[in-house]
Amino acid sequence: MSKNTAIKVSENTLKKLHKLAGEIAAEKGKRVTLEEALIHLLDENEVKKMEMKSHKPDEERKKLLSLLEMKIEGAGPEDFKEYEYRI
View 1 (cartoon, one colour):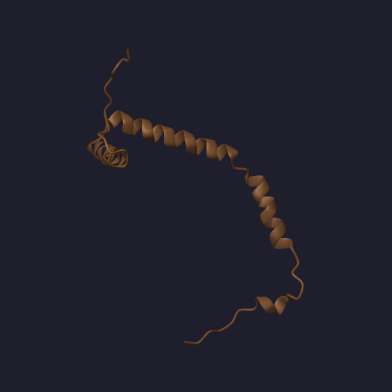
View 2 (cartoon, one colour; view 1 turned 60 degrees about the horizontal axis):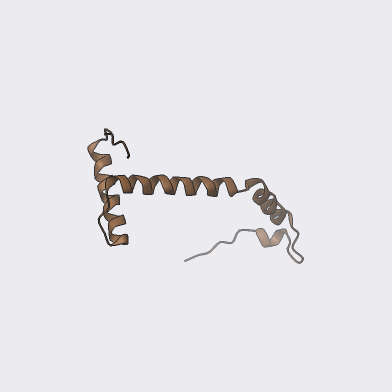
């Protein structure tokens, strides 16, 4: 048996929770409680944490740097000059 408790939130937060619950209800096609909306937010947060853990910025940074340092045959400094476009 679960123990229920009350939490205090501002009117603005309550409106946002009701809006989220409405969006989830529209997706599911059934009524959704505010608790289910909160659980949905917590689950989304867990997914984002897992994505962040799997993200490897050092490897991606090395790949980007190697692309920037790569020499392109036939390209010279004149290819990087700015052009004046007149309208």
